[in-house]
Image (cartoon, rainbow, N blue to C red; front, side, top):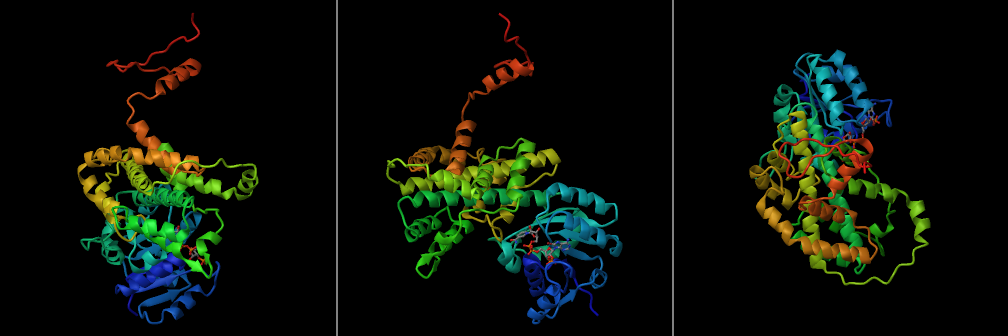
Length: 466
Ligand code: NBP
C-alpha cells in the first residue's frame, strides 16, 4: 500500500476541512480520531461522506495510522488546545522516529508550545506550533498559516503548508516561518486579540448607528465604507449579517446579547500586561464580552435608568473617520505587542512579513493590512510612519465628536475611547506620572528620577519632614 504524505489527528471542524484541503491539493492523507470521545463513528462517517477523495485513509488505531505515513512523517494535530495535546504527544512519542515532524495546528498557548518544542527535540522529533486562521471555510479552501518552532522541521513541511495556504495578491503563500519556539502560536494569539478589537469596534459602530437607523439602513452605510480603504473581511460579513432575514425578522435582532469567547483574546491581554505592552483596545474588547455575559444583572439595573433626552445629531461621516482612526490604533497596539515580544524572546519577528501573510485567508484580512505590508517595511511601528501620524492628527476631531455623540446617547463606546485615550497619552509630553512617582516614594520609598537630570540617578524625599 502506498504510504500517505501526511497524517492528521482530530476530525473536528478544522481537522475535516484541512484534510479535504490537503487531499484536494494532491496529498495522500491519513486521518485519525479517537473513538472514546464525542462520536465513535467519526472516522468512518468522514470517509463515507468523502468517498470521492481516493487518497484519504481513515484510522481509529494510532499505531496503524502512524505506520501508514511516509517517513520523515508529517503529523498535524488539530484537537482542543491544552492537556489533550500533551496526552496525544505522549501516545505518539513511542510510535515516531527521529526526524519526524509534529505540527500542532490548534490554538495552543505559546508558552506550552515552547515547552513542547524542547521536549520533543529531546526525542529527536521536530515540533512546529502552527497558528491557523480562517475558520472552517478558510481551512477548507486556503487558511493563513503561522508556523513557528523547529526550523529544520518547518523546512520538511513547508511545501505542504505553502500549497494548502491562502495566496496573497502576488500569488505568494500566506504562510511563512515566523521564528523559533512558540512564536507562531504567539502571533496567532495576537491576531485573535486584534480580531477581538476589530469586532468590538464594529459592534460599537452598530450600536451608535442603531440610535437613528434600522438594520437595512445601517447595512447601506457600512456598504459605503466597504468601498473605501476601510474594506475588510469582518466589515463584509457584518453587512451580510445585518441584512439576513428570517421571515419578517432580522436574524440579528433575535440573537441573545451575550458574547462568548475561547480565551485567545484574554491571553493576548494577559501577555501584554506581562510584557509591558499597551493593548487597551483588545483588553476593552475582552471586557466588553465579559460585561455582556452579566445579562441578568444588566436587565435588573437597566430598569432603574431613566434616559435623558439625547442631544446632538449623528454625523455618519465623522463616525466613519472615527472608525478609520480606531482601526489604525488597534493595529498599532497589536503590532507593538509583537515587536516587544520579539525583543523579549529574541524571535526577530518580521512585522511586514506577518502583515503580508495576514492579507488573505485570515479573519483580520483587510485593505489596511495590505497597506501595512509596505508601512512596516520602512518603519518599526505605525505611529513612526509620518503619513499615518498625519492621518491620525487629521482624524482627531471626528473621533472626539463621535465619542461625544455616543456619550450623549448612553451608548458604550469603550473601544473607540481606548483608541483615542491611547492617542492622547502617546502624544502628551507631560503626563501626571510625576504624582504617581511621588506617591510611590511617599509610602514605599520607591524613589524617583528628576526632570532634565542627565545622571539618571534615583532620589528619595522624606515627605513628612517639616
Ligand atoms: P472541534 O471541537 O470541532 O474538534 C476538536 C477535536 O479534538 C475533535 O476531533 C475531538 O475528538 C478532539 N479531541 C478532544 Br476535544 N480531546 C481530545 C483528546 N483528549 N484526545 C484526542 N482528541 C481529542 O475543534 P476545532 O474547531 O476543529 O478546533 C481544533 C483546534 O483548532 C482547536 O485548538 C481550536 O482552538 C483551533 N482552531 C479552531 C478554529 C475554528 O474556527 N474552529 C480556527 C483556528 C484554530 P472527538 O470528536 O472524539 O471529541
